[in-house]
Amino acid sequence: MADDEKARNDMLQKSGRLAVPTIAVGNQVVIGFNRSELEKLLS
Image (cartoon, helix red, strand yellow):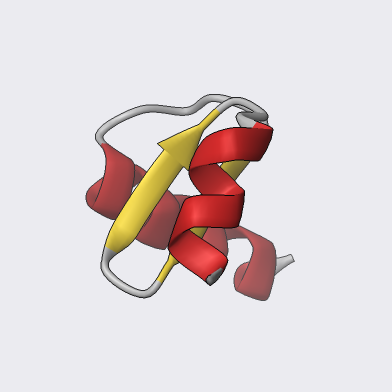
C-alpha cells in the first residue's frame, strides 16, 4: 500500500492531476490515451 501511495503522489506531482491513464514518457506526461502522441514520444 505504501508503494501505491508513493506512486500516486509521484504522478500527482508530475502531472498535477489524478487522471487515468496518466503515462509518463521521459519528461513528458500524456493524460488519457492518445495513440498519436504516444507514438511520437516513443519514436
